[in-house]
Image 1 (cartoon, one colour):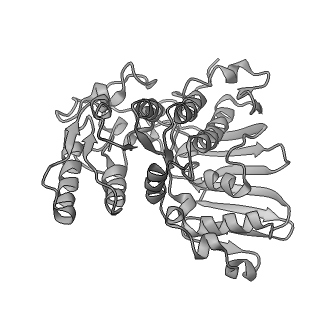
Image 2 (tube, one colour):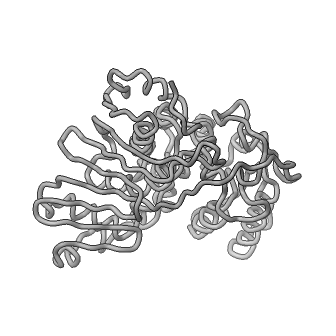
Image 3 (cartoon, one colour):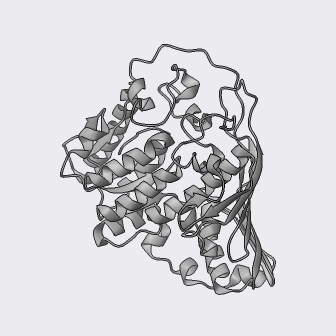
Length: 399
């Protein structure tokens, strides 16, 4: 386990531990309080469930963990700015990788992950659970069956949850945190700033971390939940390995003096070569498919349809799913053992997350962008092409 914060401690550790053929043997984090808590949680479980007396190892530096030759796979649950670099390093070290979404901050990082998966013959899984939910699987089954007829419009919507924050004073770095290592000086593209708790995570707690609203470290909801809802919509449409040809969007950033500075709201339109238009916006979490013969709407826990028959129809992916189709963790572990691709390999992760990033860039630059998916470059827009290998770290457009 690389990164032992809220998502790892509350979700990823317990979900992996429940799998009978998985043992967690090491944890890594530059925050020693979080790392020690994770170690205790794992050791207690291993003793009580498996009779394992050896405690799991702890590492401040992920490179030291990756140097071990007895670890088959890693779960990376760090802040977003570390995802691409750590994912490539882990595969180069011979480890299979489950990587928290969103897996990248730039399109170049997506290309690097995709290429590393193939080059090093690794198993890769985007650690996103939305596709394995029953509503998403039902939506996929109906859309793919053709029951809606020709689909002319798709909506993928995410919550409005990001907020501004007044400027934050610098603070002493807590003794348990190696802030330089956390920030990724000289290893990531996160601009170095003075430590403040609302730019990192709550001290000795698991509340929502401030880094998730800071462009230094992430893109906000446009990628955070886009890799759930837009991901699901693209999967249902069979477009999760294809790019849009045109992207336009508008959005609202906080005031220039706000410490938290990710988009507060946005609406992005993607046009695909086949004529399908996907609207991606802040509202509430759902995806909706409108076709000639009706519509369906699916979220994490709800499903609605224009025709009651669509609610009752039997589908193998819904009624009798395999273990892989019920759990993203099971999908990953089964692929580690079989060496077959996961449901969301790096190619899919790159395409889906990069589509989110294309939308963010269209909003950021205020341009209608034309995308060449074959060469993965913008057409006649060098200002946008200059951002293919750079994350958006400020709400002000680059000139």
